[in-house]
Length: 322
Image (cartoon, rainbow, N blue to C red; front, side, top):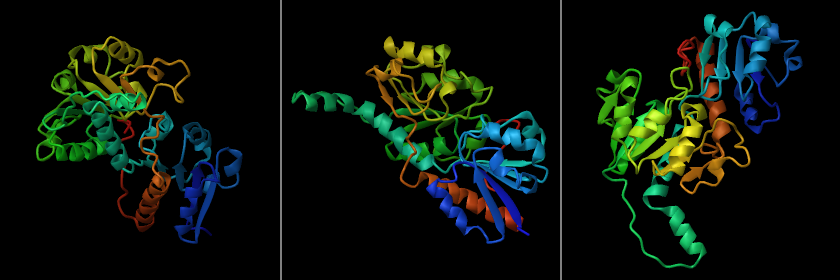
């Protein structure tokens, strides 16, 4: 008899799943993307791994997951995973929070440098063989406001500090920043506009919850500096997309660096494609050569803890949504 049965809700052909061979030999792993793939084992499963957009599949399997103890999402976002029955249950939910923070924070710095050094103008002049000197800026002395001071936010703060930037952090419990050497000032959620008004660069790295949906909209753009650059690496709907487009078109803010969107892939004809003050990534800012392997490694460490009866990493607050 297997020690544990693990259901992996993802493409069985994914090369990164070869790492699951490191699990003990008495662990039974079944991977698939349909209910039928799990029909013979679903009632035996103690663990479910979600590797992709398979929240609906989890919910359809839920009534038959009688022995389920733990669900792990390989990604950080939980909005597509949570449903009332899971939230109300004693099943533990963990996620991949922090796994991709390093690469995302590097992209945040790349976006800031893109605007500070006016790299788009450099490339345009190079393409036209035009030698025309112009001023650039330093990040040193600029202020970075971070809306959502979690793993991505703190990792970005570490790198921004190396450039001599000032760091402002918005978090639900600002008192937790009291001893944080990276943060110059922490703000509570109701002080968002104060943080925005003081920031040259703004990183949106908040999870998508009822409280953060539409967090940055018209009122936020109204208080931002004209030279402000918005960087969204969290979830698309945290920013009101149509209002961001207006602010960019009207040059009420300097620009935006975007890795996430309301609709993905971004539709043809969307204004973001043609706006010259947008740096756009097709949600690949963390897609390094090893990103999926790293996500599986995170699960393997947590499974080791689960099997040993040790506390799991990244236990989420299901009620709060992150």
